[in-house]
Amino acid sequence: MADIAFLLLIFFLITTTMDVDTGLQRRLPRLPDEEQKKSDDKIKERNVFVVLINKDDALLVENKPMEIHQLRAKAKEFIANPLNAENLPEKETKELLYFGSVYITKNPVISLRNDRGTSYGMYIRVQNELVAAKRELRDEISILQFGEKFKDLQEDQMEAVKSYYPSVLSEAEPKNIGGK
Amino acid sequence: MSRFSKKGKKGMAEINTASLPDIVFMLLFFFMTTTVMKEVNLMITVRVPDATEARKLEKKSLVSYIYIGQPHRSFQKMFGTEPRIQLNDQFKNVIDIQDFIAQERDAMDEKDRNKMTVSLKVDKDTKMGVVVDMKQALRRAQALKISYSSNKVDKL
Image (cartoon, rainbow over all chains, first blue to last red; front, side, top):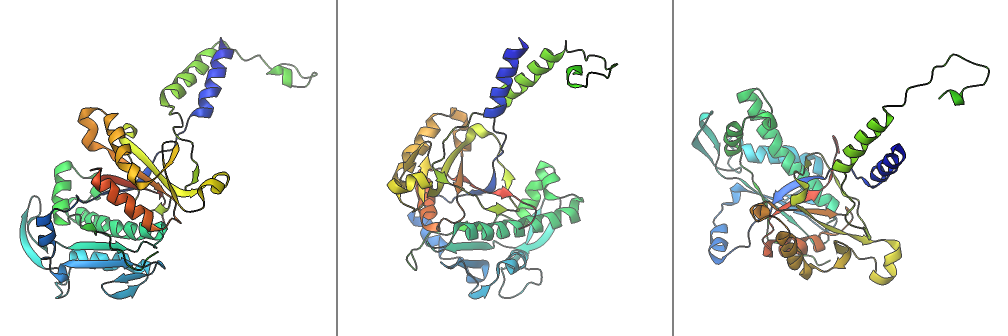
């Protein structure tokens, strides 16, 4: 009896895979309809943070070349606009649950565009930095307000923080530039 | 156990093995319930990138996988070295994505269909061209929840 059980046990031990899949979870935008295309053009330039990656994996952020390790700080500055700078997103006063009346950026958009020749590894690194920027901002405000990190908050607290710093990354419509 | 010890030495008591089958059975049931059979036989090399912000994918049954990477050496004669898409056990093209998604969707419970996640397992040296095409195909197929599969690391 024990022999058979051992046999089965060894079989399952060998075939079992314990790996958990981890990844950056994102939502793709819906395919645009005609109306949407028009309204997209209306977003003001100061509200958009343009990140370009070329085929040599070099970054161009807001028309300036940049190293990857500077990107996170720059993105955070853009999303929050703490000094109310002219060239960063517009701010508005908003009424939020838990926070009351706050002065936050209206709707900043980070537009990430890549070339067809960009390597996937680089693309993910940039995505990772941008996701990290958002996460750090949310963590900061969560700790300030609730004394806990964002991921440990209650559901409705999370919602409040989410509307404080909304998800801003837009995957731009691909454009064919620069060939392969 | 005493049979392994040297002959001259005495005094080691025999361990009671009566409970051994129980223990083995318990382990057996544990592995039987947790096991997931390896579903696909990868014909391409996939080394997913690292990311600090990677999160666990919940509910494996809601996840479909798409693999992109360079074919293994044994397949390179037939398929070349350009990155290829693998769905289940076959090399496919971008136009097949829509059918694949429809198929995967049909296999799910009706109430779970809008929670479907597509996990993209893409080799980090792949050029974005094929990934962009893939993303457009996924949008056309209305599979908008995606996950860029990557290894969770603490620091890049």
